[in-house]
Image (cartoon, rainbow, N blue to C red):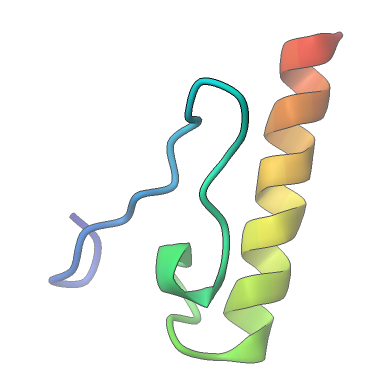
Length: 49
């Protein structure tokens, strides 16, 4: 739980949950959505390498 709300930013079977709602720093903001997408892309990249 991050800042009093769940942070569902773990990898699912075939992808990731992303978006402003999964951001731990910028919840509800466009910056959170961008960072969430970048985080998920980096995790997928790392998993595939």
